[in-house]
Length: 494
Image (cartoon, rainbow, N blue to C red; front, side, top):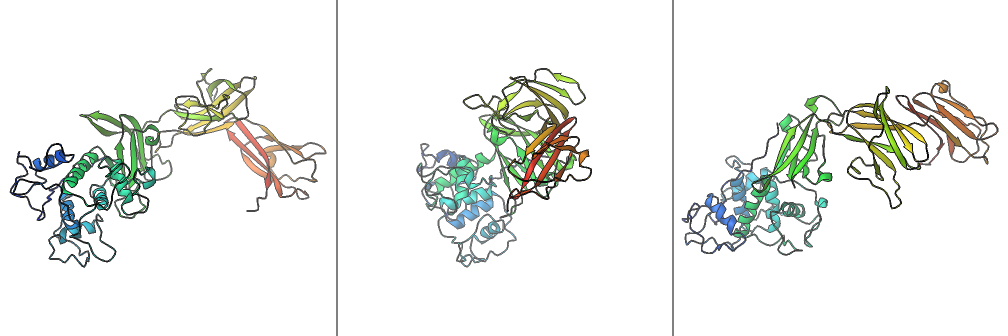
């Protein structure tokens, strides 16, 4: 069962003592130094009304005051309700057990949310920077771990491999914060109380619509594979992650809604198409706007979607017509609809033809909506007809059928060239059950007529052609459709 991750909000205390002041957080009074015109005002008052932050006894909030790393640790530990009663000593030389922030720091280090400096210090009295805050927010709220290269950095001071680069782009991409200017984030600049209130509230809002799918929801240890159409549709992002720091094991996937619509999403414990339901799940992803916010829901299904069968028509004339029947001769269509396409990717040419400036294309594709074996007869402008075998197989973790196509080509030839002394050829025993081999008299032209699936090599023990090893013969079969290949096997010196 899918479990929508609930955002947990603890108590955020931004005074130096991390206790609420005499100005009650539930008070309807305004802080004298937080006018509504300030960009962080709405966040400050919202959090104050919810008893998350408070001001000072003199009625101020002091939004320009900075926050230390120790204070930030205490804030985050309370936000995510970490148990600080039993903690492991992180070993920072500047954080003794008597330090007021010791338990919070130790608990966060144990969870992998914060770390210290390379010299063994934590720096509890150092002000926390924008870059450090970005990393804490990503880990504390379990935000999607987008890869750095998946999004172009707009900031000149945020480059790959520099400090908190990945976390900065994550919170920027999710709309949690902006830069200090259009092209600078200023990761080493200190965070103020006003900025912290703004970042915390927007992080909370950004996390709410995100649905997290966990391997443990299915009693699995990890996801071996997942599939979605998010890259093609732009409906949502599917971002893999791990609950274990620095682990390559994928045990959770964040689904981030981007716009309204319906897409697909599937996960599996195994790489193969095992039909046992305990090894996979498939969902429709529905995204709707509710009260001004996007809401993503998952609907479990066993459906398969219409899948294109791609028929290679390179080096042929324009396609005039396609008829489709089952392998046993049942006519399905005398004029099947088809798309023209240059690309061989299944996801391309779904809604429109794709040709070059002269109207040429490499393949056509017809829609298959049921598993089974079919024959497509393609008629070309010049009158030629070519049959293609099509096989559609259900692959349980996928929404799409596994499609195999085979152009009918019962015979094939290869010419080794008149300039070479090829000598005699030796056909292996029982090869005639796979294909009948003939050779034009007095020449190096060989022909193969296919009979059934299989392959073999024709030996040429006396030939003088450089790098030639032998002649390869391969016969493919799909129902009554036979496709023959005969070719020179060349030594590539690899």
